[in-house]
Image 1 (spheres, rainbow, N blue to C red):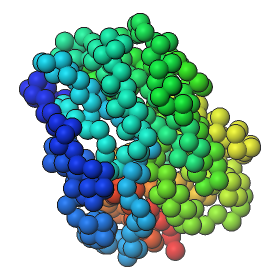
Image 2 (image 1 turned 30 degrees about the vertical axis):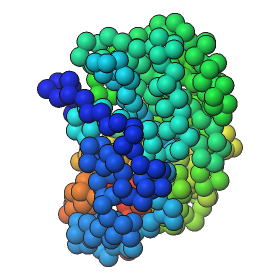
Image 3 (image 1 turned 180 degrees about the vertical axis):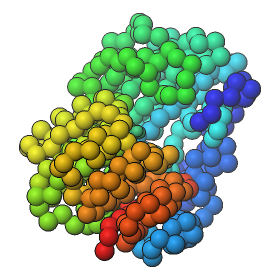
Image 4 (image 1 turned 60 degrees about the vertical axis):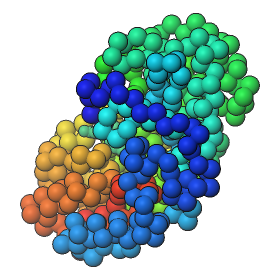
Length: 407
Ligand code: SAH
């Protein structure tokens, strides 16, 4: 999201009375479709969306190998386990919560969304309604004044643990205890509440300082039979149903026989490496830039009784370079970079390291195509399999798993 001062004063308010029933929203006729911009494909039926994505992946990647059919969702609604809302107070003092209009800082008022978890949406509306009675103001990005900036709700679909993160512009939270008591009265299923202070002029939702107001300060979820701890700032896949499909594909492609040394690069909270260790990898080493995620990964390995696994904090490219200079080489490398894809430092080291199998999990087929181009032009690796998995129904985002080997 690009911050644009020019636009920040124009706030688009979509009256709640315009919102149609949830059934209508689920039928693809969301009233804020154009203004929100989040669901770029909702003018298409779900089968058409899948076809659109399949075609796009084929266009970009078929030069490398045949693209397998995309795996879609049985029920492609309310799949997001993480929901964020921004706040704004209009001139008449009415508080609006919702999302930023795509590419701007206009707040589009939204109470429920076809992609978001239903309980998370209800919690956000309830917090908004409580603000006036607790004299809690909303943060103003122009003046840097005000209190509540964002809300973040994460829910473990398998455990039903719920985390509420209140992102505030200032650390002082006068009515803290009563507010926590009231929201817990309305939603006893919330298992932890965290205050995160973000007083920077930034696009990032979360700041550096946080304080646990209730519960443990994290939630847990279960994926592929493994238990994972998720902190407010750690990356965790937002569609747990399809994440299992994604990880199962990654494991199928890796074809672990046991005793392999496996690298899990861009590992987040260690999910792929932990699933690999559970499925027989001899030894797993993970690397991740985000320190909070690395801490979670270490705890997660222990919680799943895995001893053959180590996690390191650092840049994946730097780490790969270091490993490529060592004698002991990994057999399998999983890579799951952010949308920007990988970099030449990483890919050059990967080629030098020469593992038997590389499994590339990508959330952006454009950068995947670029990276595959680089690898195939600079080594004798071939692309053997590509399978798209629909992690983000109704949006234009596409996830793919790709097998790189020498067969
Ligand atoms: N494999 C994980 C996370 C994938 S998201 C999962 O499936 O959940 C990509 C991850 O890469 C994020 O956790 C992000 O913090 C991390 N990351 C981004 N740039 C990085 C870099 N240069 N080096 C290492 N990790 C990086």
